[in-house]
Image: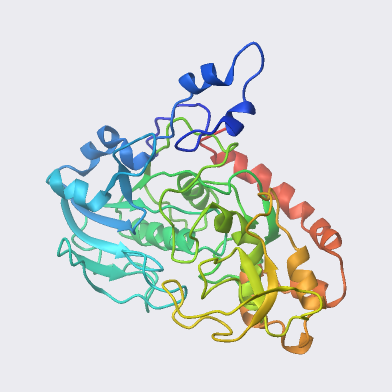
Length: 410
């Protein structure tokens, strides 16, 4: 069963910018007139009247992190309360919290195991879904009537929150527990691109055969997981979706809270699909700086070709960054025009200008990020970015057809 109440409208940042509104107006209407009629986006968590009835007198588990909030100010999104705190204040019986990669409060490094524990503020037990177990156990769900999933995603296959969604749905389906999804916008929903994951390279960094950038919200993606039979053993998870109001996929959405330690702003989120490939190479993608996924570099890149330099150091987002304490030569992309497709030029040029080509790829890591071995082979064979991207076209068209069946928004 899917519970949906969707209000169609123009997707907007909070506050709405005149530049974005211009795309949707024509004379004789003025920008000022249009601003008055554009409604702000309202995330699923904010529509409490639609989901509190599902939770009353139930034993509830929350799958969430620092982004699981209810905004008190719908215009600026600067004032908010955590979903757990709000539900507890309404006497909802929360029994435990399941934490994804980076932990419940979003402070763990990428790839760092998250330990079980107890939330200092609420005293609730926290069960890690990024430790030795990626899937809730039967025991962990034994005293739960309903699971609430509320995490801000960024719409990229190797961003592991959709992998957590898969395993939560699978565990709940096996134990006949419904999942309530509080939907949020996808900041990379304006395009679909990248290589499609091949099943033999499935991992927690990519579970399903989808392109790198899929342009779906968590709610839409949950529908696809069910509809495509990806839970296995003919399982279907009972899902109830509280959709986002006044939202479409067509206009950029600025995240008020960083979704993970190394995605600090809109630019990093926009560049993440393109620069994430570098995680499986000798290139540092800005970890160990305050410009994560906005710059890249390596001591092995030619100083004659790359004139930007920086030195990665331990910080909030990375305790031991790649090339820690070494001068890296590369590019500063902070002022680049926002992308509406994956940029392969930076990856291809970095390989071609590396002083240590034979060590450039960490094949295992690069393959699970790319979802295929073909990309590394194509780069080594000297194919251009355009030639490589042309090989994605057939799979992308197939995915777009499948995706249409599960959309909640225009």
